Image 1 (cartoon, one colour):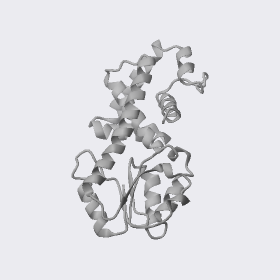
Image 2 (cartoon, helix red, strand yellow):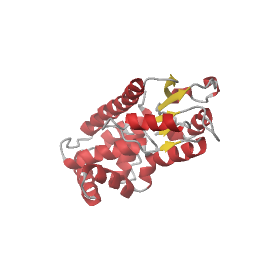
Image 3 (cartoon, helix red, strand yellow):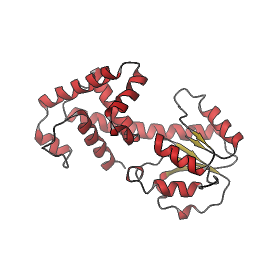
Image 4 (cartoon, helix red, strand yellow):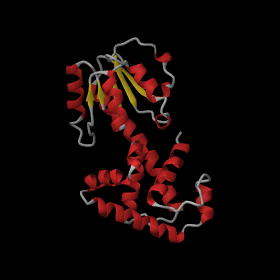
Length: 233
């Protein structure tokens, strides 16, 4: 997501970044109010943020995000600005990945965006795979692949857990299959896991696990996400 009030700079950033086939631009904004609203609606992996936005400035946006629990462990903001706004006024400076002073190199910007993606992807993939192995998932089925995609999507976009239908729809569009196919695959994978996993293993991995709750797909995804957030370094 790109938030920059200078139209020319905004358009140039968007055009340059989207030349990379692995980067998807989900929003472009030019004022602080819309930036905050769009961020909360879309939950981007990376926010490219100008500090000198009208209506609400960049520092106020960061502080507003830091009031949201699920945003506290995300270091996903790249600041681009020639502003001298004091960073010390931030309630959580750790949300800022890097600061680029204008004028900046677009190649440097692209590399920073990729760094954030690689860092997040490696952390998620390594920890998810370890959990799957311990829970005796079949790591090579299509359903487990969809399950991993669901965890990664919900980890960075927690609003998708409001209803799994939205979550499965996102996966289905990316995989070019039906929502029903994704749902069936995940349920099948979880059902197979349930046959072999022990309650002792579950309590060892997820001490907060409520034994009275059945291990539905959604509940298991939530357990994974809680684990990932706790072990985030």
